[in-house]
Length: 276
Ligand code: C2E
Ligand code: CA
Ligand code: CA
Ligand code: CA
Image 1 (cartoon, rainbow, N blue to C red):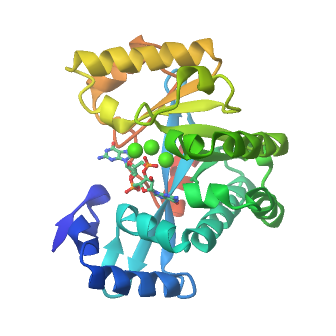
Image 2 (image 1 turned 135 degrees about the horizontal axis):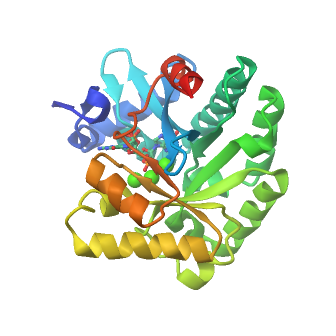
Image 3 (image 1 turned 60 degrees about the vertical axis):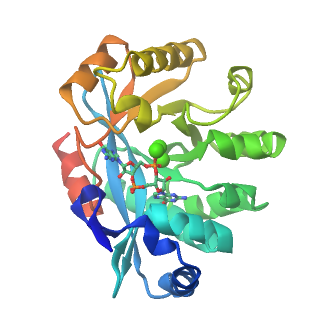
C-alpha cells in the first residue's frame, strides 16, 4: 500500500519490506539502482538560531524507482546495510554531496557545510578515510566544509575502532556530529573522548517540546552538556514557533526542520542560500 509520507512525496509503507519475496525483489533492484542513476540527494538547511543564517545543509538520499515511485530511505537504507550495498551507494552519496557543495561555492554562494549521514557498515570499512579523501580530492571541496553524521549506536558497536576512525577524519579537517543524540547508549563520560564538534538532538525529544516536561528537561540538559563540552547543539525536526521559542530561551545553537525548510533539491537550496 502507498501512503503519503514526509515531504509529501509518495513513499511506500514499511510493510512493503516485510515479506521475504518483496525484500528479495527490493535487493535486486537496489543492486541496479546506482548504475541506472535512480538516486538523488535533497538538502535540508540547518540554521543558526542567533543569526538566522544557513550554516549547513544535510544531504538526504532519495531513491526514485521507475515503477515503484519514491522509496523512503527508512525502507532501503536498512536493506542496503544488510547486503553491503550501502558501501557503493554511500560512496556515491559522499561524492555527490561534496561535488554539489563545491558547485554552490563556485557559483559564488556563501559557503556552507554539507552534512552526510554515514551508516555503521560504511564506518566499519577499513578504507573509509581513503574514500573521504577521494571525494574531497575529486570535488575540490575543502575538508572543513564536509561533516559526517554518525549515531551513538554506531560508535558504541566498536568504541575503539570508531574513536580511531573519528580521529583520522578529524586529522583531515572533516567535522563530525552525533546524530539522533539521546536515543542511543553512549555514556556521558565517553562523550568527552569523542572527537566530535556537534550534537544533534533527536526529533523525538523535540516533537512535544512545547508541552512535555520530560522532553524539556532532556533538551535543556543536552544543550548545557554541549556548552560544557564545547560542542555545538542542533535540534532536529523543528516545526513550530513554540519549539523555536524554547530552543532560543535555552541557548540552543542551531535548528533543522520543516519550520525553516523541508529538504530541497540542489537548485532550490542554492536559491535559498543566495538570498542569505
Ligand atoms: P535522519 O538522519 O535523522 O534525518 C532526518 C529525517 O527527518 C529526514 O528524513 C528528514 O527529511 C526528516 N525531517 C527533517 N525535518 C523534519 C520535520 O520538521 N518534520 C518531520 N516530520 N520530518 C523531518 P528522511 O530524509 O526520510 O531520512 C530518514 C532517515 O534515513 C535519516 O534520518 C537517516 O537515518 C536515513 N538517511 C537519509 N539519507 C541518508 C543517507 O544519505 N545515508 C544514510 N546512511 N542514511 C540516510
Ligand atoms: Ca542525519
Ligand atoms: Ca537525525
Ligand atoms: Ca532521527
